Every structure is written in structure tokens, then in C-alpha cells.
Image 1 (cartoon, rainbow, N blue to C red):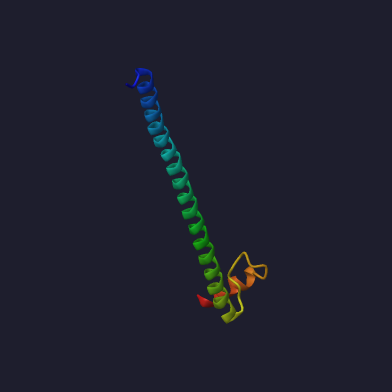
Image 2: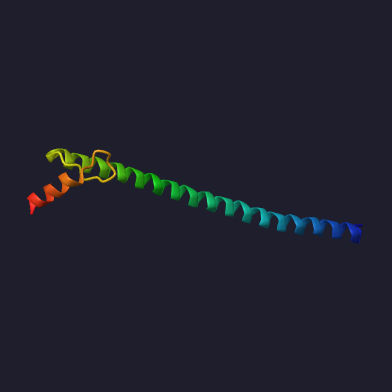
Length: 90
């Protein structure tokens, strides 16, 4: 019939395959989870960039009404004009 050595080899191969499959599944799942987090961060960054652009457009339309630029990052920003605007509004 079947020798004990052959049975030991079969069961060793079986358990080795099971443990390898478990380990490989964990590494694949970890890589998938990391990719999922990276994708979520990238989506969030894109949404923030879109919101900033929309805010800038909104501020540009507001500032174009009276000619005063309120965005301090704009190269045409003039603090004196802004202060005069606020002074007249109050």
C-alpha cells in the first residue's frame, strides 16, 4: 500500500500549500488596502483643488464688481485699496 514516508510528504505539501495560500492572501489584501487608501487620498486632494479653484473664481467675480482684489495671493492685490473699501463700507 502507501508508505508512511509518502503520507508524510503528502500532508507536508498540503499544509505547506495551505499556509502559503493564507500568507499570500494576507499580502495581497494588505496591498489592496494600501492602494485603496492612496486612491481615497488622491480623490480628496482633487476635490480640495477643485474647491480652491471654485473659491478663487467666486472671489474673482466678487472683486471684479468694485475693482478691489481681496485675494492676498493675487499679484495684483493692493492692501490700501482693500482697507479703503472696508473703511467706506463701515
